[in-house]
Image (tube, rainbow, N blue to C red; front, side, top):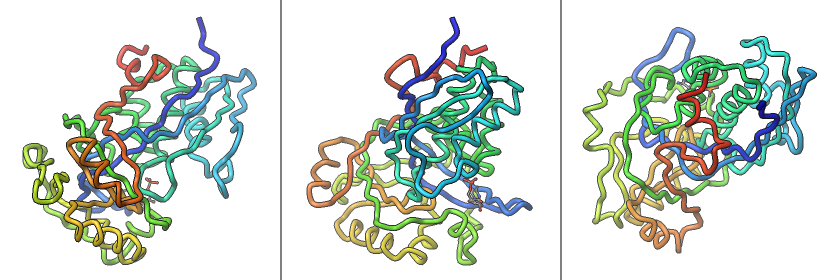
Amino acid sequence: MAVLSLERVPAPAKLNLFLHIVGRRSDGYHLLQSVFTFVDLCDYLDFQRRDDGVITRAGQSLAGLTEDDDLIIQAARLLQRATGTHFGATIACDKRIPAGAGLGGGSSNAATTLIALNRLWQTGLSRTQLMQLGVQLGADVPVFIFGQSAFAQGIGEQLQAITLPNLSYLLIKPDVFVSTPAIFQDQGLTRDSKPVIITDFTDSLISIDPQKNHSVLFFGENVLETVACKQAPKIKILLQGLRKNDLHARMTGSGSCVFVGFKDKEQATRQNSYLSGIILHGQPTMQMPSDRWVVNGLNTHP
Ligand code: C5P
């Protein structure tokens, strides 16, 4: 029986556990190496199939965003064009992931839209085909379709699954918006990190440091941090403060959010008692609460 609507489909946030830049493509995009993982901070999307081909948003749109800039609308239009379906959709988004935070909210929304509409419209694209469409919308979109913690290369679209322990994260968002293009275009950006292979870091990706309040030391660094701290000094103040308090802190993506990893929730909660962050839990795979979540179903999807 045809499914006519999908409700409360989660679009999780991501963290970059490290992020190195190893080169640049001729189109200006950077070649990076990173580990992506997901956390239980999610936007929730509702999809209603339409027979008239119209794609539109219901409820609140993102402040200051026109439909043409909206990644949800763009993703739906892209899938519609690519498959030639005559269906449309009305899509609502309950937004909880802050923008300009390095958490991938827009990319995650786009990925969820591709996955959900592929099901609702019965367009039958494979996960790989959806990832190929996704990268046209943004370099971070494919990993959200991939649906597992991953080592990413290329511009972020070449993905290898990795296994992570269940970690808790203390996430703090400084009161500042960071523009991803401005960070990547900065002259001061380190673009020549030494390339690593997956076996170089798998044993050392995570080490627990009892000297540093049991916070997790992650492999490598986020090379975007230096530039983000220069452009937005509030990030620098936050990172320095956390490090002075004996915590391993790292920025995610192009910022502005900063996180500290812990092996157990109690440690994260204890540290947060004097910090104004939120506690998140790692979701190494996007195990979502009901069968309405279709990432897992994609393996067997036509
Ligand atoms: O792909 P996305 O739209 O998310 O990227 C936003 C901007 O970040 C791009 O316009 C580009 O300037 C920069 N970027 C980059 N290399 C990457 C990812 C993003 O230069 N691998």
